[in-house]
Structure formats: C-alpha cells, structure tokens
Image (cartoon, rainbow, N blue to C red; front, side):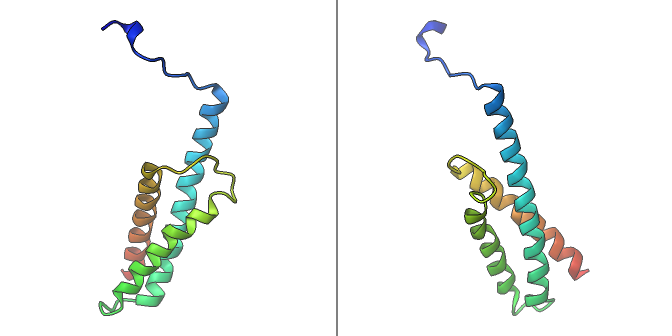
Length: 105
C-alpha cells in the first residue's frame, strides 16, 4: 500500500483549532467549579458521617449531569462525545474529591 491509497484527513483551520482550544478550557473550568461546589455541598450534607456518605456521591452525580445543560449556555458547540464526558466526569470527580477531603481535614 502506498500513501496515495489512504484517505486524506482534512486539515483543520486555525479558527477551528482555536475554537476547540477555548472549548477545552471552558470544559475544564466549568467541571472544576462544579466539582468544588459539589465537594462543599457534600461536606455540609454528609459531613464526616459514613452513614450519609451516599449523599456525597449523589451530589457528585448531580454535578456531572447538570453540566449537560450548562455547556450550551456558554457556547460550547458541537456534540459532546463519550471521551468528552469521561473527561468532564473525571475532572469533576477530582475537584470534588480534593475539596471534600480538604474540608474533612
């Protein structure tokens, strides 16, 4: 097989790359803010008790799901693919865990 046999991948313009970069920053900032707020709310709802720790996970799940409706409001265009949701969920989880742990200490 020669190079000519493979289909060409269209090159992205500078504007498309810049838009993707800005959308990535927006996803990181929004998921971080929601993770921090979820950690604070989890601390006040569940506190240090292990019996009510499930409330903390419920708050985390709600913080991830509510972002579905936030991204269109801040002009994050395009369809969010599964890898985007994995990234958003991981970032929200990370900020939630760190903020809740800091408040518990």
